[in-house]
Amino acid sequence: MRSLRRFFRRLISWATVQRDEERLRAEIEEHLALQTADNLRAGLSPAGARREAALKFGGVEAMKETYREQRGLPLVETLIRDLRLALRRLRTAPAFTIATALTLALGIGATTSIFTLAHAVLLKSLPVARPDELYRVGKEAHCCYVDAYSQDKEFSLVSYELYKYLRDNTKGFSELAAFPAVDMLFGVRRAGSSEAAQTYAGEFVSGNYFAMFGIAAYAGRTFSAADDQAGAAPAAVMSYRLWHERYGSDPSVVGSTFNVDEKLFTVVGVAPPGFFGDTLRGTPPDLFLPLNTEPYVESECRSEQVWTGLARTHRPHRTGRSSRSHRSRNAGKTEAVAPIPLG
Amino acid sequence: MKKTDVLQGTLALMVLKTLDVLGPLHGYGIARRIEQISGDLLCVNQGTLYPVLLKLELEGSIASQWGASENNRRARFYRLTRNGRKQLQDEARGWEQTAAIIGRFFAVKAEDLE
Image 1 (cartoon, each protein chain N blue to C red):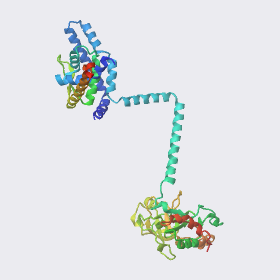
Image 2: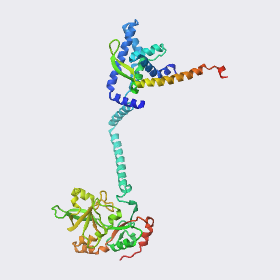
Image 3: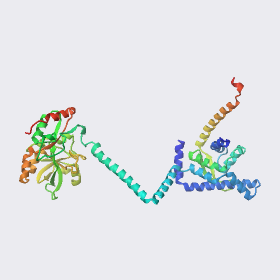
Image 4: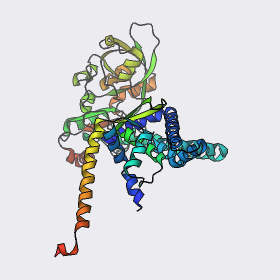
């Protein structure tokens, strides 16, 4: 308690160094004057009286030093003095200073950025409900999805028919969602507005895509299985980023109609902030469209691509799945479905 | 350990007791009083008193303010605070105990132990 009080007093007296010095000087002066007066009364000569008083008082400088140690924050003062000295020394050796500063800056910068990356990619969980229950089917991330489809790639790419077969016949997983293997760009414009169409990344996803991730809409709703059926009204889910940055979080966006590659889609909901889709990439999808609307969107493409669009069921889709109940059986299941032939 | 070292350590206690007995006093007055009481046995440079006064003030045992000395000069007067009075009581008790124990040790003669 007493040391705490002393610390605060020291802090205050540190701020009033000048006044303290003045005070000490005045006190010494007064002390010597009184002692001299006494010595005079005792019969000493004026010069002798003063000399005696000074002798009796002792070394003034040594005492002042002790006095200063009591007062203020000697540690801080010493630190500041050391810092000043260090800076002076550094100024006399600029080459050394620059080299050292650069080394430190590079070291610290590199460490920080690498850890930031590692944190974002490796440590931070996906912004989904139960990241530990998500599995990607197949080991190979991509390859040859148009010309040279191969089952050697452990089912990282499957046809739509095979996806449906796996979805309906694999019991170990609560959901099995499909999304495309390629990045897609769409020209997007709010229907009826005069704004120019802007290009945004998007993807076709199966109706259970959001349910698999366990993600609820930030506004409106996400897809249900009914949205992903042939003949269903074309619905779209917008990313929070697009909604926030382009449309200023306008609530009327939900429920309004948008032109997506000149096809009309009703935005039924907004995905939550921080959800950047199924894959970590530079252009996260801003629009999610039901898988079954793919032929609807791509029908006006040039002839060789029409084939691709019509042959949607043969077009390979990457699949992700989540298992809520039989995680431990996951590996076995993947192998068990491996020999299923293409439909 | 020199005799004066021990006395140095008790300088703070002497200051407190002096202020307790004589009331508010300036530095020179305290020095004179200690000199008188100790019968000049205490060979301290009077200047060393001032760091002790500062330390006591920072601890809150004494407080000081400017006043006029007997020859009408500006002088710093020190007085005991409530904290200082309590500290004095505590330390005086401790000192008496120590002195009593040491005293008993010296009073004991060899035959007393048999």
